[in-house]
Amino acid sequence: MKVTYAMIDKELRLKGRILNILMSSSSEDQFLKDMLKRKKQIEKRKGKHLEGMHCREEWIERKDGSKQRMLIYRPHHVQENLPGILWLHGGGYAQGIPELFENMYQKLMDTSHCVIIAPDYRLSIEAPYPAALEDSYDALLWMKQHAKELGIRSNQLMVGGESAGGGLTAALTLYARDQGEVNIAFQMPLYPMIDDRMITESAQDNNAPIWNSDMNAWAWKLYLGENYGKEVSPYASAARATDYSNLPPTVTFVGDVEPFRDETIEYVKQLKEAGIPVEFTLYKGCYHGFDIINPKAKVSQEATSFLMKSYKYAVEYYFAEQHHT
Image (tube, rainbow, N blue to C red; front, side):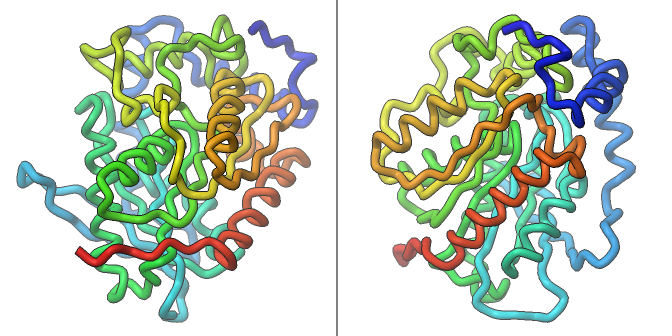
């Protein structure tokens, strides 16, 4: 899908063009180098928080004995009985840390008080699939097991994330459903990266700013490692799932010029056919991550408002009791 400048929302054009010059990689080797370089730059942001955010660090043990860092955000006034949200950050599975997405945590908390658990999951440049999924699931189990002391109500555990974090969200809800250890009340996989096959129209020859077909293919290669190009599990690439039943109510949105447009639309269709309540909006003229890149644009404000309205509704109406194991 060729994307012309004229197809992009007027308010998003300039930032898209500038960031494209700064961020796009010209080859697979360059992409890997860029990811490694960015990782070093991003590391410096660890431990630096938005003013007014109440955050603490927690380390939890993996099965192999190594430790995973997690950030716990909560409202200043200690409250009990809040929804718990596991938020999985974006970055093509290859980059990013939880600190980069604090604007989102702030908006969620301002909309309806909650406790946010943000895991610093392993990235594909250091460990391919299933490392990120395992880390996300460990964090989800930890949130369930420590709900009481965190002030979280156990019947309202939610999961969300953007881009690769959205892909992890969709994969994690499938995995959690099949494991049967945690019941998730609501999910927010925003413009999720969920189909490694790249067979849809929007995923092919897409030259939109921020995230295009080339970068998408390189990122999937890194994430799937030696399994790239083979039949992979829906826990790696959620669009490969064949059973969408018993998944949590869902909200998502996507821009109509980005590579993930069609796979998001198909995912929503599959959920609806399985009887899952879904709120979905397609935003015209929007490239990948438009709401983060240009939050002041009218269309970005509309998308954020749509998401927050759905989240507020979920807090009031969606619950999932836990089985006591």
